[in-house]
Amino acid sequence: MTVTSKDNQWVKEWRRLGDSTKYRRETRLFAIEGARLCGDALRSGVELKAVLYTASALAVYGSVVEPLLASADTVIEISPELSRHMSDTINPQGVFCIAKMLDNSLIIDKINIIGTYSALEDIQDPGNMGTVIRTAEALGIDGLLLSDGCCDVYNPKVLRASMGGVFRLPLMRVGDMAQAVETLQEKGLTAYACVVDATATPITEAGMGKGSVTIIGNEGNGLRAETIAACKHSVTIPMAGRAESLNASMAAGIILWEMCRNK
Image (cartoon, rainbow, N blue to C red):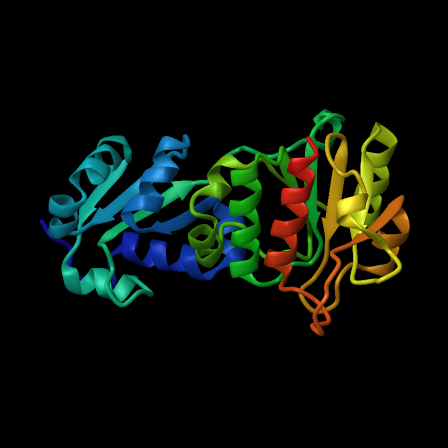
């Protein structure tokens, strides 16, 4: 039977998971939309609690949807009208999943001292967060540390921008970033505060690579003063133009590329 009601419990659950960070964390569940992203989640080992799909989605994206249906605990066919109600896109693909959060978290005590890591402090924009995760995973960064002030990585906008990177890149929430930096340096890693400061060392001259962790700050305010003070080095991206700074995700991409170039 095709479900058409907005009051269906699974429809309401999917929407609540998409809207509420608190509810996601309480239930350890999250919402995914789109054939490609849902397929990426399944291939990355994400457990699916429920799949909601339209008949046209099964016809068009059968090679992706059929494995989803086979692996989910609950399978529900929904109407095209209900698909449009659930989606925040103009032309939804008609594939929605309720999934269990992955346990792909980093443990600070097990971080490899010859690895390459980055950390984000108070990044608030979901698009920036997702883009950084996508870039870090693509370039081969070993893990990403996130301060408590960062937005939720299971935010739907983060999931879309990360293009599945959330499912593959080891992530770790840390409490206070300055304290985390001190712990990492005690383990033997070299920490680099990424700042907008002409007196800091240009990233092209810093020698960042294996055994490094770069710390990137908030979109508007940059890094906290105590975090900068905790790092042994401060680095900057040299700029020739008149712009005061770069977009946070753009800056992160340049910094991560330089780290990986020096591996």
